[in-house]
Structure formats: structure tokens, C-alpha cells
Length: 72
Image 1 (cartoon, rainbow, N blue to C red):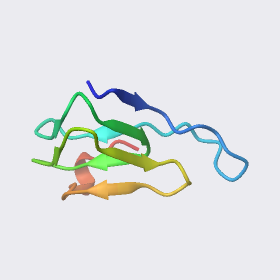
Image 2 (image 1 turned 60 degrees about the vertical axis):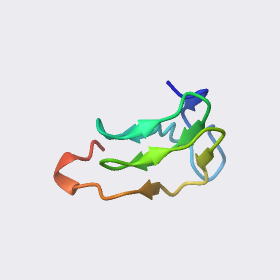
Image 3 (image 1 turned 90 degrees about the horizontal axis):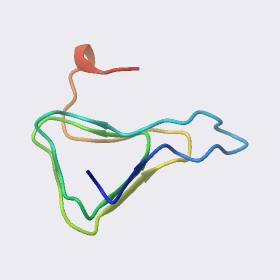
Image 4 (image 1 turned 90 degrees about the vertical axis):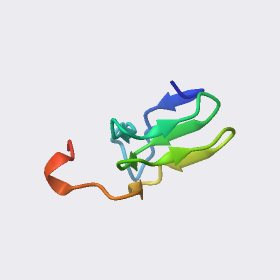
């Protein structure tokens, strides 16, 4: 479990509380921070002390994510 794995804070332009979506084969180091609509595809590695924020209304995608496996 990452240090912070939480939904995006609501803002005036985006009130959704989008949470990170992590593929089963992705590795997320315990000392990283994923906030908001972060989408990690198959075999993605997130290193220690990394911060990935997608809380401004648009998703941030790393790796290849098949559209048939996405949870909306």
C-alpha cells in the first residue's frame, strides 16, 4: 500500500472523488503517493518517493491499459 493512496480532493471544476486504478501486475512502492485519477497499467513499476497526482480533472495514465479491463 502506498504511503498515500487517496481520492482527489473536490474542486470547483471537478467535484468527482476519483481514486487510483492499479493493475494487478503493477508494483507500487510503499513510500510513494498516488492521488486522484491515476491509472497504472500492466507491469508498471512506481519507485520509492514518487508522487503522482491526477487531481485537476483529467486522468494520468502510465502503461498500456486495455479498454475492456478499465473500471469506470
